[in-house]
Length: 144
Length: 359
Ligand code: SF4
Image (cartoon, rainbow over all chains, first blue to last red; front, side, top):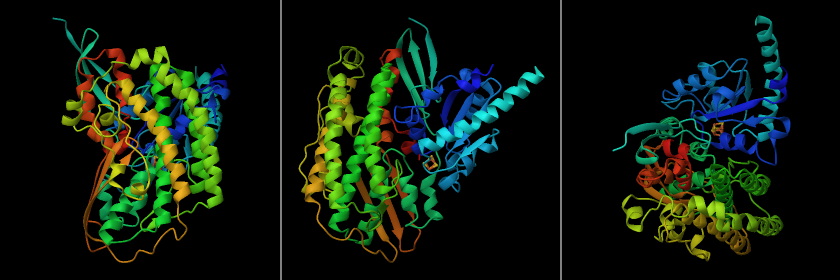
């Protein structure tokens, strides 16, 4: 079952970003960068997704949504935090409604730095994540 | 009477890059009421004025929204400059116009793509975004950033564009405009696109005014209102007319944005001819004291920045009213009575920018 590495599906959720990173996530899907050539497909359904791309930080309102999406994703799965907001809260860290990076609520496997991140960096991050995904996959099948 | 059902729409939804949540009360296939709940990406950045000084806030203002980032930064600077009586050099004013219009073009292209995506027209989505990348190239070459430019500065701008570069950009924009024509034609003439847009989500003129809609949403209903006509930066020295349509449906809103693309290309051309030589910034010292309300036109409509300063380096209050916030009551109104299948299309025609709205 190496298909998961050859064609990982991603789901994207915007925590509380300024959407600079979000449009770069989308830009990575479009012809200039075209991640589909690596078999990476954007899905809207968490149950189909292997990779969770999350931009922006965590706040009171979206904790439950982020957890919910994460829990609905089947194992093995990885989480990629895109942008400094998702890593630490970034420029908004001191805002009263920002609780910090995504790592506070769900385990993050890869951090992609940048404000805004570049699509190349996102692709790099996903490729890095694939190695982790493969390891998780092997452990998973051993257990099964 | 049919049973009423509530269908949740969002916050995580395939057509929405950003989270907004709507509870749709439906009777059979008709939406009878839409109840929005916003605040999912509220950060509370207006309160940052208490810990970041008025110069640092420029960076925060640029990060209110990643799509119209430059115009946010510029409006904030415009407000502070007015409070402090700073005269911005004319060259900087023109550069601001060039970047504002480039932002408008990239934002409208982005929207065209998302719109096509919501119609299920994938190839059109890809085409629009492919062209958008070429605008981003120009932005990147002139400012260094793709979406967050970092060029706005109190007292001017941070980067200059040489005149030879401006000419080269002009040529590239001509090419881009040519490439854009066939795509614009699909939006305007294609039967399947028209089928989804004409007569959907109609907003009559009186309603648009009463619900306080702004930007393309208002202009598509036949009301002439464009903040650029206030003449901030150097818009009063350039020649352009607000784009107005009268039908008020989703199709009219698309047409307004497509025609605005042409007008933005034209404004950049005019600005690169008229741009005077000279400095690009002035040194700003001291602290602001006073209050001002700055209004500018973003791709999505009018944005209002209110600043109040009391003579120390931290502002007393910053308030931002963004275009999508003004358009949400209008959206809720046009969703009443529409078909459930049309909801994504209607939501997208207001060009929602949630991160602006919730700040
Ligand atoms: S990292 Fe920067 S560009 Fe990305 S969401 Fe945060 S503020 Fe916006």
